Length: 206
Ligand SMILES: Nc1nc2c(ncn2[C@@H]2O[C@H](COP(=O)(O)OP(=O)(O)OP(=O)(O)O)[C@@H](O)[C@H]2O)c(=O)[nH]1
Ligand SMILES: [Mg+2]
Image 1 (cartoon, rainbow, N blue to C red):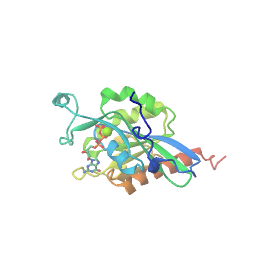
Image 2: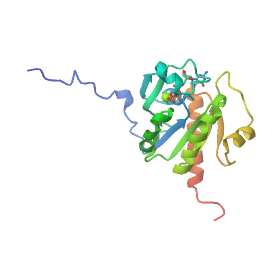
Image 3: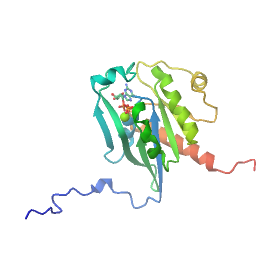
């Protein structure tokens, strides 16, 4: 009889084990339009091997998806990305990337469950791709920060122009990042945590 032994079943990798000092875990989601760099950000920031669910895009997608600015893109997320980062010895973030293509947006509801906050990634070549995303976030009342993923050929706008175009109030943190850089992506997550902390603090006026 053939039996599976512990040698044939891959167990968790020691380097993926949660640090024993971790006392708090927070779930956050990375959202944004198609191809803005969500999977890239989860990949660059995760300290464990990230889980991604990317599939090759077929020719059929050409008539369905707005590929302007991302013509070279050939993979897309069909379910979610997942990664983990320890912000310090105690605090661990579980980072979930959502699919950007609208036909997979029904999956967002599950991904948002239990999430304390969100990062909205924006590509300034296709600002309009962020409108529906921001609308959905406001509906779900999830606090968020907005991070412009600065692609090389993308136009740059002032903060005021971006706030006006995206209809963002001044209290929503707005920053620029490079999703390919671990440090830059980590800064975005820290900005979100600072924002969540400021919302949780009792108002000074009270
Ligand atoms: N130049 C540049 N390219 C980037 C940057 N971030 C991501 N990319 C590239 O842009 C493409 C799209 O990135 P993805 O991370 O797949 O985007 P996504 O938002 O996960 O895409 P969907 O899941 O399809 O919505 C990839 O080819 C990345 O290598 C960036 O900051 N600068
Ligand atoms: Mg993706």
